[in-house]
Image (cartoon, rainbow, N blue to C red; front, side, top):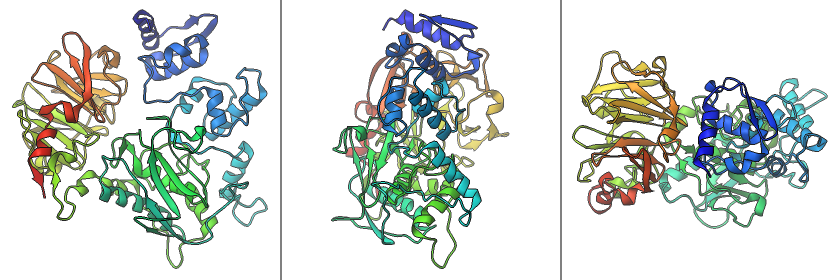
Length: 553
């Protein structure tokens, strides 16, 4: 790919032209300064067939976002029975698009526009959306009309060859395997809580078995795993998991995803709870905030199950006998899932670094003494310049006034102040003392909500905050974004989007981290010069010391 061509695409997507001409395609791009570059890429992909092969796999298209050809997508998820030519005059393709747009709460036009294409790329469940527009509409209508009406409620389980439910109310489940970086105790607790979501609002009772047969089995696989090519997993993004309806009670999860058990990353709990719904006989829901909606949603403060989810499971199995439904809000479940609850697991001795060294951490920073601060869940580890790891300490004990978890951290190399970021708020500390006027809302200074990472960058003598495909240079004193920012992350050639953290090391390089990978950035060449696995290749991060020495009991 010619760099000059991609520079043209970059300029195209961060400028504000009136009309752009590509080949024989003319189209308008309105107010692109307020449009994300990713959406611009989608628009170019949809509008100009000449650019599709160039853009897919190009440096501007996120490699963790899966873009299927629209006709392949519509066929995979049940909107097209057979593959058809995707011409504007194809009635079958147009109707399939209209149905998909309706299901996805998009403007129903039957036109493959940028918003529709962008929706197709979002992570979701691999089970198809088999019902027609009319059936979905009838189901939503039934929520408000009621059971006694002539319309009635169409039960939310499949009504053809998979039209089955469990004909018993006591079901067993088994966790066949799980990702190596997740602790067994934590995994079992998360799965148990996911099943309890459904048993708390219905007559179902679930019991875990550790070996042998079970009614419902949960397993993790890579790629093609003998479920048919249409069910082969596609790596990070795309289809996250799929499940089978009763009485083949199986739920399969893509082992190439970077699963998380806390508030940062791809939350495994929410995906498990969704797939359990399928194993119990539930289809996808047309209600946008429902757990059984086809698309992945983050675990927030609201109740995990919507009214539609509860009505659907009760249609199949009845209400909770002799008691009221118990609903758990997402923020409570997040607290259950934090990694910190696994640090002390009975009397078993575990390596100190086995927690932050596995898969990913939440934030990382380096102070004036070159001590590293690595944050995961409720805890922080301090790593000396020689790689010696401290015992884990609660964040709120080390820095009183912090929330239980954070999203980004940095330390000023000018004065040693600690900066922490979460949601739309920020905290500033001198040593362990919260400064007057903090926490404060960072949005008023132009900073993004839920930043990916932050660092103090010596060549600029400023804090730099990263979010998605943009970076923000921040005035330390007033915590305001400097003029002419944010700018595109492409200024940092080779640095990935959606990082977990970053720091400027005393070796003169800047390091970026995402999941289990690092990117080594040369501050003079302004590009990434090396990449690899940080836990095994960066000795100063402390994982080797943790394996061979200090332990926590």
